[in-house]
Length: 121
Image 1 (cartoon, rainbow, N blue to C red):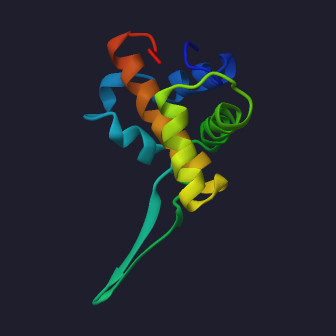
Image 2: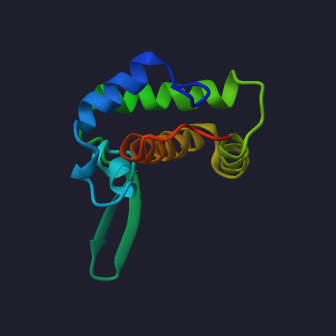
């Protein structure tokens, strides 16, 4: 809950869904576990990325998306995570920036859960 925009429900839901932080070998896989990575379509010479996979816990995915939305639109303070997402929003659009930030939040929150550290802006 030390991350701006992340509340009690989001942190509790992620902690309950992950259960034991050592389950994932890397924190990067936490974003994929909640379906916040693009789907890959590959066949022969054809190779393109699609929409998010929507695998895993849908409730946590929705809560992470809402936390990302509140970081982008509601928080007034500026920190590196927000400026990173705003650059993506300028380049690719606000919806894709929200999903990218939600994935990044899942990775950060898993690392915080595993290490027992607090968020530092």
